[in-house]
Amino acid sequence: FVEVHYITIQQVGNVPITKGDFQSLPHQVQTWLAQMIQLCAPRAVYICDGSEEEAEMVTNKLVERGTLTKLTKYENSYICWTDPRDVARVESKTFIVTNNKYASIPHSREGVKCVLGQWMSPSDMKQELDDRLPGCMAGRMLYVIPFSMGPIGSPLSKIGVQITDSNYVLLSMRIMTRVSSEIWKHLRHNEEFVKCLHSTGVPRPHTQKIINNWPCNPEKILICHFPDIRKVISYGSGYGGNSLLGKKCFALRIAGRIAYDEGWLAEHMLIMSITNPKGEEKFIAAAFPSACGKTNLAMLTPTMPGYTVRCIGDDIAWMRFDKQTGELRAINPETGFFGVAPGTNMKTNPNAILTCLKNSIFTNVGETADGGFYWEGLENETPPGTEIISWTGERYKLGEDKTKKSSHPNARFCCPARQCPIIHDRWEDPAGVPISAIIFGGRRPEGVPLVIESFDWKHGIFLASQLKSETTAAAEHTGKQIMHDPFAMRPFVGYNFGHYIQHWLDFEKDPKNKLPKIFHVNWFRLDENKKFLWPGFGDNIRVLDWIVRRTNGEDIAEISSVGLIPKKDSINLQGLIVDWDKLMSVPKDYWKDDIEETLSWLDGQLGDDLPHDIRIQIEQQKQRISQI
Ligand code: GDP
Ligand code: PGA
Ligand code: MN
Image (tube, rainbow, N blue to C red; front, side, top):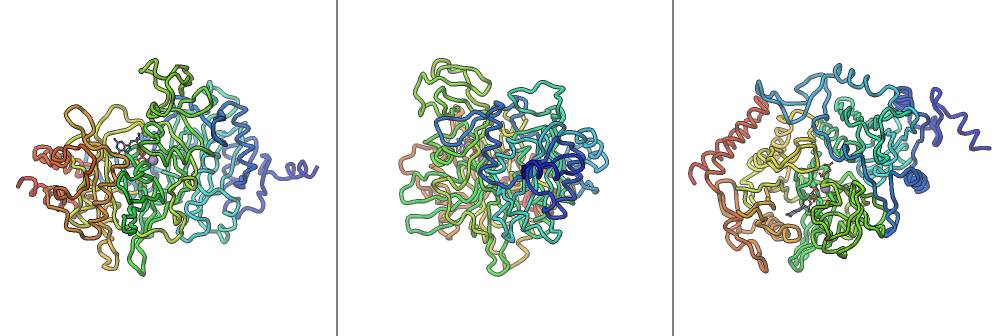
């Protein structure tokens, strides 16, 4: 009786609150929620508290409906197959909205299409949203998810509230962020929070066929960011990068802008530590574009004896220079890994496999007939003849038809970071860890050596600005084109990219700042038979070891025209067969074209917003190359 009474008196407008106490929420949250409830017109509202009972209830509902299937081989783990039209981030539908266009994007040269962020005016965006949002949750439950990026209550953390009509999103947000009713206590006194609205864009009754019990509205996908008012609205997609708004939308695009305003950095970087055989530990951060190796590097299993790697984060780093010590301190604002499944196995990344054996959600991977997960890369760990059900529902026996694919190339595992066997015991330390080196990298099949160290801070920022990488399945780009992706942030920057580069350059102006050394790596150089020249994965420790030794000032580097490179035999190659000269060569013709192309691209994209220091770096690089 009490329950029934409770339900009937709590309502907003005429929408009932099925769980939670609306009146007790912080006032600023109530105001925003009331508006959103009226706009989206759900059938009911559910205010999440982060409890296990809540997860169980929602999970059971999704299993009943067929969106999730329990993987009986593991504890509390589920597989999900999406509508095949909704499998990756959609960069072409991702926008930054500000009154001033050039607060969002740089002054690109006339006739050049800016790819460093897309801007839309508030009035145009209003039209787009007016066409989508009214009644977008009709017949659905609206979940209210309070979450913290970073440890709850820490001064470095930021609070968000996500509204969503997708319970898959709710379950994933519980893994990736800290969801708890504790959050409300930290939001008193009219404090700011990041407003995140997500809808799959499929109100009831349905006018379109729902595929795989996965509601989405691909024609109308829109992911928009309002950095001035700390707001994200995402419509039409349930895929992680588009719908788990704490991740790329908030922790990079919105937080990046907050960081710019406040003097810190929100970066697309893993955070890890390396302890050498002498027991000395160093922390590094590394930025690679999506599906280029962050998750793998973050939890690498060293092939060199005596080394220990520990993981702090695999995707996002919030970093600031400590006012007292001058150290660059980094935290991982997330609590889970949303990793690329294909290619992950007990050889390449055992720690990832061991992390996702319970409490995990697998999206667009294959299933084995005995209730396990399967994807390309697990061939050697799965008995031939095992029956596989592919992500598109096709059944086949492993080994019988080599053309069959079990998984989408951007299939993902989503699992709690605390389950990682090598998670660092300080991974939730609100003070963060001190960063000694920053690494940038991408997929460069040609021309780019295994590792380059920058001459200095400015040159390091130039290395990051000229970052390029082969496109992957993480976004909608098709084919394998080499794209510019400065700082691995092209799709994730929330303000004028020229200001972003200048922001990085400006850290040098404070003499108190202990600037980390900057490096560039390339695990993906190919030989003439299109085979990788470098074994990668656990053997990347050999490069990390060199990098760490450089941060200790060891005399193991020599000057090349593109930066400092390892002296011969300074990288431990014991037990490997690699063609060192091919791996490390700096071909003059390649780099001569490359610097011309880079100048024309950066100048075209950034115009007069390209910092002067970068132009000087380009000139110096031209000089050095002409002298090869
Ligand atoms: P992230 O999206 O940046 O976190 O990238 P992941 O670590 O998930 O890796 C994406 C893909 O690249 C996976 O298929 C990996 O197997 C592959 N990969 C990661 N590291 C290496 C490496 O060192 N060498 C090679 N050849 N492939 C790698
Ligand atoms: P990642 O992230 O590939 O950078 O790990 C996820 C995404 O692209 O949505
Ligand atoms: Mn990753």
